[in-house]
Image 1 (cartoon, helix red, strand yellow):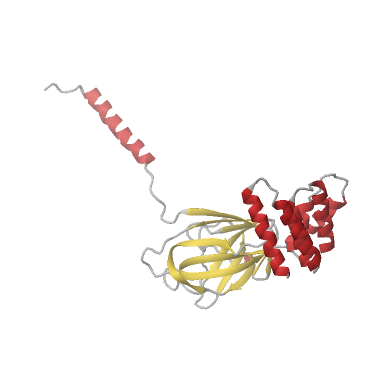
Image 2 (cartoon, rainbow, N blue to C red; image 1 turned 180 degrees about the vertical axis):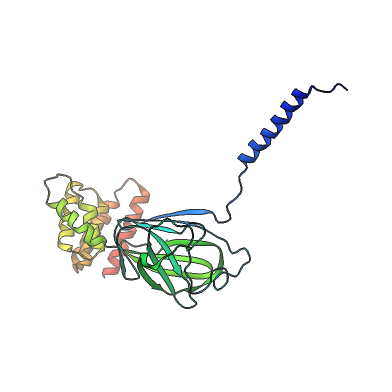
Length: 288
């Protein structure tokens, strides 16, 4: 068998070595604690949480892997960050708009949630309480089933509030989050209605006032203006009946609901027709 010349052998060996390095450079492994981003709008406030999600992996979590009564990064790897686009309240404590690090101190019966200046630090090793913006007390509650992967989520969404929860293993720590939607939006609505702009947000403004127990006389006037622009919109007539009902005008609300129902019965769209007949019937039944 003819042997290859030494220069050729060296070249082949070099190519094989280089190929191995290339393959190694391309090799990817799963993260032990994958990173995640939570984005949620509450009312008019955008909330974003960036954190890493460790798993139980057969370990004892709170009181074990995560010691009680010590500052925790609230996840893994880089300290968790939380951003609020407007001022909020967490369990009644005011927090200005901004981006913060989020630490916690888990306890058996009480947690401390720490809103901390954004220092972009790894873990909690360089945590310094002098950079705390606020400390909030929260009460842990038992989770009926174990959650394998640490989770930060939002629930109970309303225009003015939500629940921010830290969930891992059989523990959930809820924190009430509140935003000032009325104080922010009402001046904007009033300015829009007072402007010379011909197109005004009559329907959403009227429904916002209805839903937030504001000036129902204004809400009714705005809905009437919307109906005047769209006389065949029986779905708006139904909404007028809702405003009348909340204002205590039962007779007016029933009459308006009947007018909405009669107009809905003429709709060429069966699903819309049936929906508003049902809605109006239910409203009339509640008012009688």
